[in-house]
Amino acid sequence: MAAAAVAPTIVSFESTVDPAALVYHIDLFLIAIFAAVVLLRLPRAIARFWKFSEWGTGYILYHTNFRRSATRRVEFNSEAGSRHHDLATDDTHWSSVQRVNEKGAAPSYPPHVSSCPQVFRGALQLLHARFNPGVSMLQIIIIVIYIATLVYPAFYKTNPFSDPVRYGWIGVSQLPFVFALSSKNNILGWFLGSGYEKVHILHRVIGRVIVLSVNIHGLGFIYQWNLEGVFMSKIANPNNYWGLIALICADILIIFSTSWLRNKAYTLFLSTHIVCASLILPAIITHKPATSPYILTAVGIFVLDRVMRWIKTRITTATIRPLPELGVTRVEIPSINAGWRAGQHVRIRVLSSGMGIIGWSETHPFTIASIVKGEEGMILMCKKTGDWTNKLYDLAKSSAYEGEGEARKVRVSVEGPYGGPGHRMFSSFSAAVFVAGGSGITFALSSIQDLIQKDLEGHSRVKVIHLVWSVQEPSSLVPLLPLLTSLVQQSVFTPIRISVFYTRAPIGKFPFPDTFFRSTALTLSPGRPKVSKILEASISKAVSLGSGVKDHEKITGMIVGVCGPLGLVDSVAAEVGKVDPLRRDQVGGIEIHDECFGCLCLFYIFST
Image 1 (cartoon, rainbow, N blue to C red):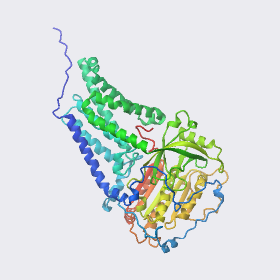
Image 2 (cartoon, helix red, strand yellow):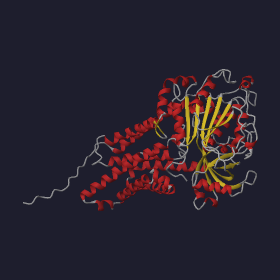
Image 3 (cartoon, rainbow, N blue to C red):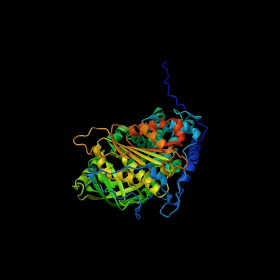
Image 4 (cartoon, one colour):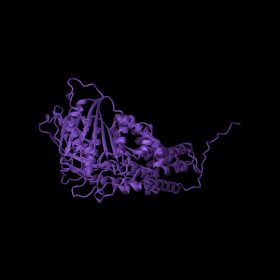
């Protein structure tokens, strides 16, 4: 007797747990963790708004009367290197000057709130150690906690091979988070005191969790339907084929988000993200109407972000000039001179046919290099690093600007400000060290100018400022030399030192005479900076007596700001971690604020 054919057995695991209710409570748990972190950072957030004038700073760009007490207007002259500037300063004169502001009142220093109690500084230093380039141990721990939280609903009384329904709910429940973390006006980042670029790593992680979950969900059903031989009849159901469309969109998103494709074809990456992210929401809600609370929340977050971006956008006229020594385009926007905080960036679009067929529609982030309410308005330094910035430089160069000629005027769209120090106040620290690489000097310039201005107004605790700038060629110093020398001269109450290092031997005649850098306030040296020695010198200066008029104030820590390539940021972070614990406690703790090249550009959803 012939053996009877054995039909495939479908194992169906009926879970007794309501998946919708389970993922809802998991989301509440994640929100509770987030709220706890916000509460821990609340004291610093309250201190950030110590002055009423600070409440509206850093959100909306506008124009107001400039203050002449700020750093003076600096004319850029390529012949600046041929003139000697006496930068010699005497530290003893600061102790004999009485501090009063323009109204004759005594100084009012900002409150300082440390990032953690002294007993936890060592542990916090370990958490900030780099696990991978650009990724700290703290970020890894946050990711592990998040994934561990989602492991519970993924395996509690269920089987991923026979009960794919729950995984669909897990994926959908994370959509509001992924949209919130992708938006430029990031409400989660605002509560944490972090810019969107700082929390974007969570966007990438959550996005991958969503894609994994919906694939388990979708492929699980496809597998079962094929075993039963009913795939074609099932997929013909509108609810099901819309689910398949959502699955395809999710997979396209993850495929075109790989670093290789993103770097090789950014426009393609961006286009697929916009199309697929816009299609996946209606596809999911059509597939499963019960998911509407999550979908509508994600839509609300997206719409709010678009409205805020429209409110924060200004269309105006800018002047562009090439600075060949730095390989950057200087963008001057005099119609905008207020509304940002030092260290923040804006996203700029150049509305000119000279930018190419699609170049005029692209937006790119650049750190603001000027002080608020300055005479020149907003200044941006756009380094030549890609097609768009090269076109911008060529457009500026086509105006035949040669130091005294006419610069080119273009229409621009400016959106922002974004990012910056968040709840951290640089002026509340006792010492400030800024390490910049190449065009990263823009971050340092705006921060130092802001500290000098607040110092003149009696609103800065900083006792010592040290700027370290690493460039390839010594000639890079030429266009910024007038500004750097003016910073030294205008910092009346706080000693400032500027150390410039160049890594390539100069070709041809050296741009400065041998006797030019005789002052210790501004130096030019070959090689790379020894960050450890620079940190130690700044600590010694901050804790020593007799170095300034603020010696009666308690020591409130040292801020280290770094802006440049990823390697520079990680190396400075490593040197900060090596500071002796005793010296770290003597200065009141050391905090680091980093702005990494590329971090402002590697965002995912709706960048234009």
